[in-house]
Image (cartoon, rainbow, N blue to C red; front, side, top):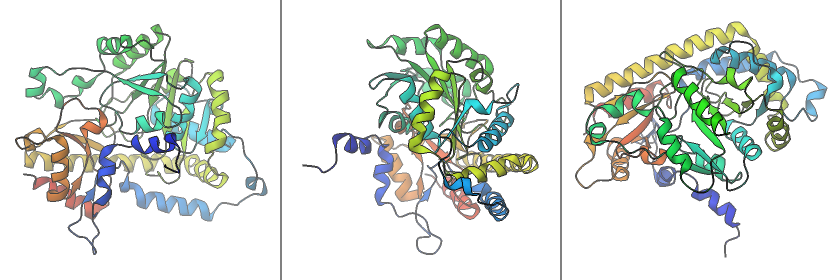
Length: 416
């Protein structure tokens, strides 16, 4: 008999299989394991580490820990931190007016904010509707403790799409109302929430305003809430990003979540935010945030860092340049190797079509294993993100430092 409860054990089962399978891999180390596997499946931004470390150290050197900071703070975030976060989000999301800090809740990362939001929106066993493919750990973030189930769209690709280049074109993946309607009508219980990611994870595409407006209109007609995960809003290396933050500031059934983990490469700071104008939702989320508050010292750091408008402007410009450069270099390597890919405008990754590399009788899992063992590349398999066609992988091109990135390109060119 296990010492752990069934719900504790079930939490492990919600993790993507490829992460469990990766447990015994020897990862790259310049000295100890130069032939080791390169981890390009975790979406972190190593490009900006020098800028971030310099700024964090500068802020900390010039900060004073005041007596009040040792005590309890507002559960939804210190006023100064929320004000700076509101200004930063307004900038990267291009809102028509400044985001109201009173509409923000600051929590310990995007997954904690999402979990609390869905506890407030749904009962255990309720379902959330989301288009496929989608971020691999939504099932964990929403299902582990909130008890929410995912209901995916079940779009079937045509033979023309499967055999042609349609699966490497952005418009192919835009959510279709008819697919949402079919999924909505499937089953006795109706989904309460439509969950979107924009820029999309794992695809990296930015949905046009016309598509987003149509999705919101459809969901409002069903009496649903819309949650838009915009954690990559400041990592746009192309054109066309449109945020729902402006809509969330006035529409009580639209909510936006964000975090500093990607755009600032600050996944270790654990700083996320919910934007909502619905007081009936904000009130319980503020209380639930008791369980995942951000420390007062981290909030002070965020307040001063994001409050430095000159630094923020320079950082965002340089981040865009670095991300764009890496993206272009990955595409160049793919072109040399004959790998097809989905051209995208945002995010820190590229969606690769590796179907031609699947040998006769191989599954996607087999190919993923071979990529690790023979080529030293651990990418996110499409199956873990509910991609309904084998052979697609997400490669995070910012997941490693500069020297390791050169190895990633070399190994990509050597795929066979």
